[in-house]
Length: 409
Image 1 (tube, one colour):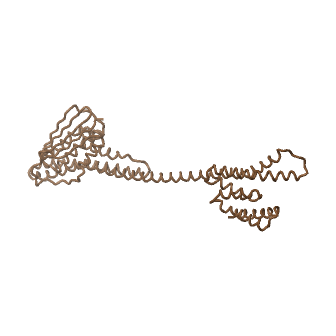
Image 2 (image 1 turned 90 degrees about the vertical axis):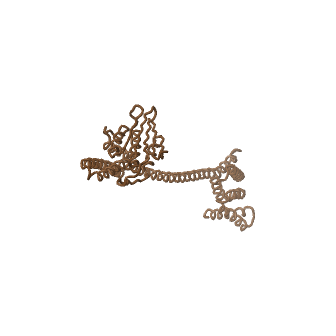
Image 3 (image 1 turned 180 degrees about the vertical axis):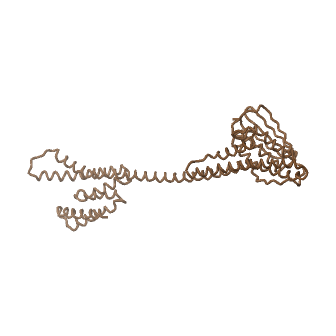
């Protein structure tokens, strides 16, 4: 608004001078100048109209500020370049013509020697270029810079949206990882402890039944219960120790591998039930599982096909867990049933099958073992994680069969 007012005053003064030169009423010239200069207020909305008005009043030698600001605004706007070039050429031509006439008049009116034919067009060209070109070039620079800043701002907004999306996805992945970790820990706790606790309950029931009749056997069963209880407590302490250590390391910013809990649980189970005392349970330790179940009075047959060999640690542990959990389920749901375990060592895989016969009439003195319903689910998750095949279900004779095939690699 300030530039429009200044332009109106300039055009009014130049209109008064033009009216005096052309013998026109001065108020009319002033009014014409005010109207022409006030057009600058429309420069942001209609820059083309402002430039056209400035070109139109150029012969009256008015509207210099109107032309300068109008050309700058036009060049800085989003008007197509061909229109900018056309209007700038028109302003340049009009200014050149007016300057050519005015310089020619000044040369003829002066008493100096004739400067030559080149002087007038050269001076007129200098004036036209000096009036028009700086405004156009500066406007083009400001327009390009403005568009660049808008592009950078849009890019920054887009990057901010992408970062927010990535943050949401990272939070979802973290939540998924926490859920997977809780599931993994629950599965390890179930696999490591449930088997021993189930055997402890069975031995405790047997102890209660034989104590009045056979004190020596009762003492033997009591010793077995104590040993299994101590083993279960040791495994629990080791797993809880891993969890506490992991929690402390998380507070200090050091990540804890998810497999550490599973590794500790596996090592605990191996120390408690493996004869070899290796770094984790393996297929060779299945014989110890069979022996523990036989001590409870269960009839268990173990058949091995092929030449036993070493497999990857995760394959060994998964095979062990499948057999262990299958035996635990027999203790819970089919106490007294005969069990057949088959292990097959093949070229590219190892297969295992645990099948129990139909359970007989339940013994009223046998304990009722609780079931969480996660045994088969945990076995399936372990086997499928290694790319194996897991099948479970009832048999035609009323028993139950668990089969798994693991790749040897």
